[in-house]
Every structure is written in structure tokens, then in C-alpha cells.
Image 1: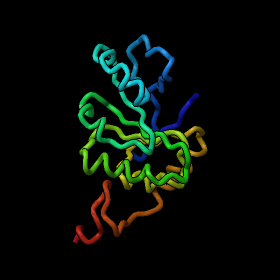
Image 2: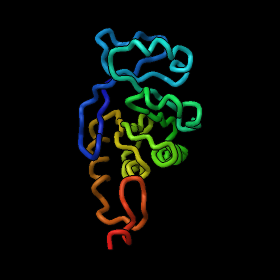
Image 3: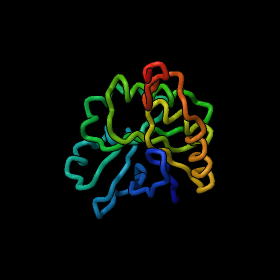
Length: 162
């Protein structure tokens, strides 16, 4: 399935492949994203993987079990299975502020354009959409506010600029 990305506020091409649990990793050593369960079950096989590597976790995931392995990942993809699940926002904030994740943090799955601005505010720098129209709407949503009163992962609070 083709995905449409917004990375760092602009439309981007996706070089990553979501690899299912029963699927083989790309032969060419391309960028691969695997589920957290697969990572835990066969982490030693990824030591020899020549391409970039990322892990896909659920919005309900507690990051502590993965924290020791963060240096091995180039990307963390948080899968949103229900657009009403607000845990994704807490998880994004935790990964950036408490665990100091500096790599690509991607929201995937049931990502709505209405959530784009708020996902960016808590630390997501890449958003994955299933249609080009949703990506276009998300790009407009990201540009909807020019001033922020509250501090966040993407900007200081307004009073800190004075």
C-alpha cells in the first residue's frame, strides 16, 4: 500500500517498508520497519541487517522495555489503531522528553489530518497518511497557527521569546 508522508512539515517520499511478522526483510537492505514483538523475538538477526532499521510500536506501549535498544533504531513508528486513543500524544512526549529520542518519530495507522498539528507539538516529526488528500489537508493544518502560548517539544512558550 502506498503511503503519503509529511516529514518535518513538508510532503516527502517514503523510503521505509513496513515488514509484517511473516514477511522477509527486503533483500536489497532497504529501510525496514518491524513490529516490536518481532524485534524482541529475533533481535540478533537484525545485527547483520545492512539497511536502516526501525520498530513499530502500539500507542499503548510502555517505552521502558525498548529504551536500552533505542541506539539500534533509526526510526520509531507509533501505530494509531483508533483515532480516539489519546495515548499516542503522551507516548510521543515521553519518547522525546524523558527518553531523549532524537531520531525519526513517525505516526502511522489511523492518523487524521486534524491531529497533525498536535502530533507535531508532542514530538512527531513524520506523519503517514493513506491518501494524498489527507496529506494535503494535514499540510494546511500544520500551517494553521503561527503563535504558541504553551511550550512543547517543537517550540518554546511565547513568553520565552521576550
